[in-house]
Length: 248
Image: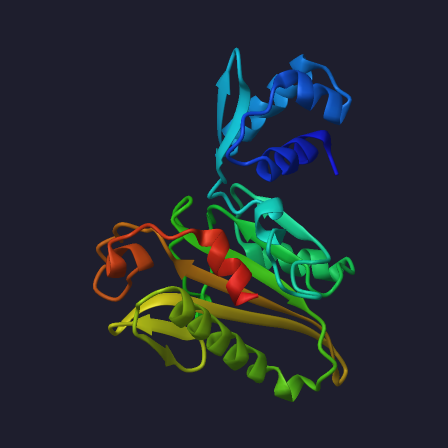
């Protein structure tokens, strides 16, 4: 664990209490100047940390960025997200990156997440609107021991997992448009893109991509009548990391 990660963990442990720079310096065996530099970096990542010349530092809130540490914290899985979370602030496509990693033998359960996709993809060559920090864009690497003919079941199981997570976490009325769209009030709130690589009659890997509209306040004219988000439906901003943990 890096010094920055240790600092974050310690401040979270002491949440609600001021911690002096001297105490942090002693705890982490680094200089107070180094502590300050890491605090600045954590603030850049969206963490709320108050500072006072006399009191030290006070942890106030976690970041809403889809950072690996935030996803792992409270994650109740054995494989998914446990063997690697690869984070990007911007990427062409999480599915494309996940396939590259899988082809290089990335382990099952590796999760690729991004704040923004420049070339987000849907089924049949469609694009997926992927504004910065407005949604969830993830791709999960799976290596199931099933014949390729059964691979479509993965998409259906993912749709159910997404729908159930939304039902548990939001008041939205959810419907599944089989096999890969999640709807709220007849509008798409999430889509699934499953891609796989096979050798003979065996699956090498499957990549399950998920795009979800979470805190997107509005959509382009060409999709505004067919797309929605949790923010639009509930009028409230939703913590994206919470959904990823629940979905996995």
